[in-house]
Length: 139
Image (cartoon, rainbow, N blue to C red; front, top):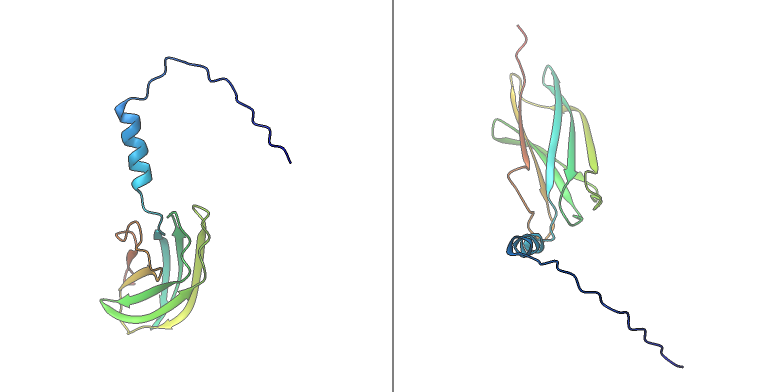
């Protein structure tokens, strides 16, 4: 077996890489390869003491997360947690969780939705994992 090696000529040019380009390259490579789960929106309706909602959750990170939950709270009290399946790495892919008739205390107006990854690597940001919804009381 023989190996053929081609050496291509390199042309010279007057292009220079300044410090700002090097700083940007270093900044981009410093971003951790981690998931970043985001609650994009939640639509909520309540009839009596039954809550129905649809939560849109995205993974805007740089890594797939194997497991995640959406937890629902009412005025700080835990109601229930819902498991989500694997998030694809494809950016801006959204998972939609639809829940109908979740029992909640009567008169409940404020609900908090939290998404959390159980990936051993921390998320890029956690300040976007929470969304609060306050229902308007009917007059």
